[in-house]
Image (cartoon, rainbow, N blue to C red; front, top):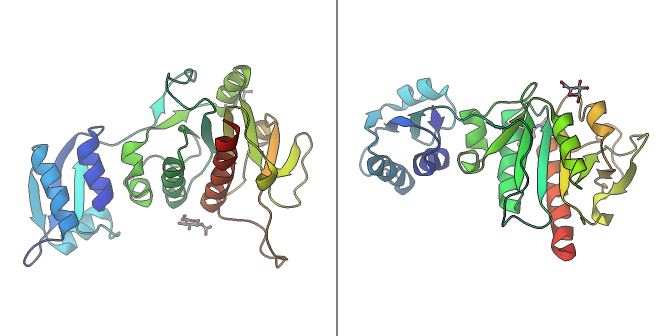
Length: 257
Ligand SMILES: *[C@@H]1O[C@H](CO)[C@@H](O)[C@H](O)[C@H]1NC(C)=O
Ligand SMILES: *[C@@H]1O[C@H](CO)[C@@H](O)[C@H](O)[C@H]1NC(C)=O
């Protein structure tokens, strides 16, 4: 059950899912314009529309913020491939992929997808195990971006990263402030210039980047706080950190390319 205006609208127009029925909250008078648009998209695709009560919608979606619409449709999964393909013709000369190692909170995953899409990331890749699957909650949190942008899933991120490093890419990890790093140098993200095709590796909410992935990193970026932090506050939310790092990297890429 895809829910929310943007996810339903995009699911209907993108043709990646097979939709079977649109449920719309019964309303007195004219439904909202946004909801009308979703109904039109359903009509265009020949998807039956059923009007139901608010309670029924809440039951179907699990009492989440459904905005008056939900769509019964086939699920979306990760795009899988054994080995990463070479970048397609026409992609940016310095592509940037976000690689997610165990992001489990669907709100974080959705929020990362939305930022990645907005800022022009070329691919989002995720580990399949220990990661949040592409659920309707993720789609809603991404404001429907999950319906538009393919998300690649890999069984073994370490293998993928090695293939890309072999093709001349660099792997960039992240560290919290004052975290020690054995190999790679730690650089504030504002001082870093992206001059190669890049994988930005982000660890999950719990344990961060796994040690074997961190070992593959050429450089570790850090986001400098702009004040003296209370000792109990030492990190950013992973989706917020990803947004800041992406903006920083992609701004520096624009200059370099
Ligand atoms: C991080 O941000 C997301 C939204 O971007 C939010 O849903 C999540 O609860 C936040 N995580 C924490 C630990 O605050
Ligand atoms: C990934 O593959 C490497 C060998 O290339 C192996 O050492 C590692 O344990 C694998 N990692 C996982 C999470 O399966």
